[in-house]
Length: 287
Image 1 (cartoon, helix red, strand yellow):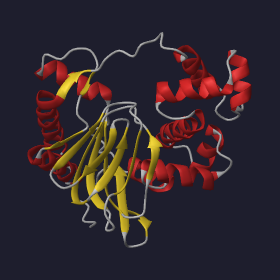
Image 2: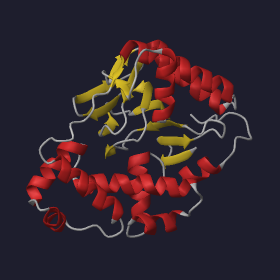
Image 3: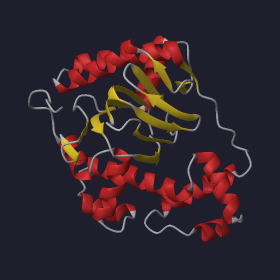
Image 4: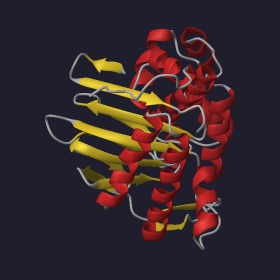
């Protein structure tokens, strides 16, 4: 398990070879803080010790043992310790396709599904999350997959809903979308806010407001998150961290290391080693 801060903090972010649409993170964090970021898929986390403060658009969730945190795709959020001793948790990151397939199979929900509540006191679902981790760590993909479906069905039936379609004609929404496209295309050499606004025929402050309203974070924060996402895909494909750093526009590998560790929770080298490793040994016995 990769150390984040000596003996006090530890984390393992990995994927079972037979469950390619599910990422797993088990960790203890004390001083580590996650900056504002979002995920392409869903997040289901449960605390086994301590308290995690999760900053969401609707406010801060103080998550303790027995609670389940549910975050929909592309929802910006932060995380930090809610008590001095930090928090220990198990988190699942299933793809959007997995969740929507389960919803179509076991619920009447159609379209893009999500969760109206961001947290719930649900010891049963919390226990299932830890059991999914245990099964995956023991190499039992059948059990992990089965328990994942039971857990997701439970949460969908209790808290699921169809996500509303974002209004495409809201003020500035078009400029925000075009700005995002420019940043994705010119990731290694992005324009300044003033230049970007001039290219789109708007003002810097108007663009900043529109972008924050549409994506929940300013353009520079979104760009850092997008760079880390692209770097993750490159690391999954076997690209070295140094080459990935250059390809996504970070100045050098230390800059990738810093931002990647803050957002993902583990350094890029540890992430790549875990992702490349096919399960061959017994269960991880880290604390």
